[in-house]
Image 1 (spheres, rainbow, N blue to C red):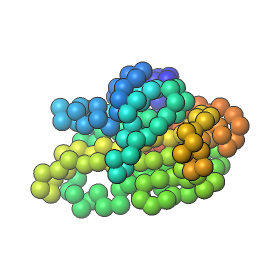
Image 2: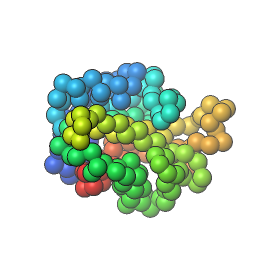
Image 3: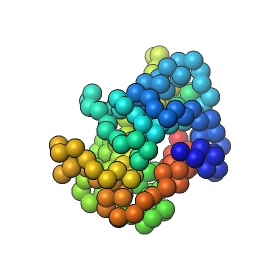
Image 4: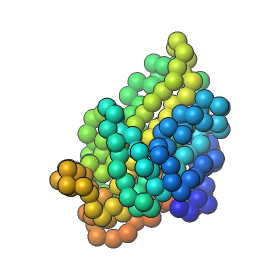
Length: 188
């Protein structure tokens, strides 16, 4: 992962602090620990090999080493909780627009938190918040995006895909991350 490329994103705060580990169990779990300790707003947690990725409803997110995007964005927010309504859908829309701008590809949103390409899941979003009363302490935005994945388990091959599987070429993960964080920062 070429972190310096990600730091070139035209953002004010997203991605300016990157915490990268070649391997970790879950970007979401590490982000949760760091958020409790007031990590810098907009920090990205990224790994090349997530061994226990989290999806919604307790599911796991599978990704081969060095082929996909597995990251979590940490937002330390002063938002009121009602401002978060629909945030996952807004993030999905931002990712959809970003891929359209980069490559002209049309993803579809499967409400509430998936993006599909040609009817198969290519991206999942896991949004978690911590709040006290009406005040939001932090928001975690986990994103798993199948970029250069070439094979899926038997149970997933009919319902999941990747950019490489669909378009038969390698894609630069860093370029996609840059576009995603630029788009997300505009809506947050």
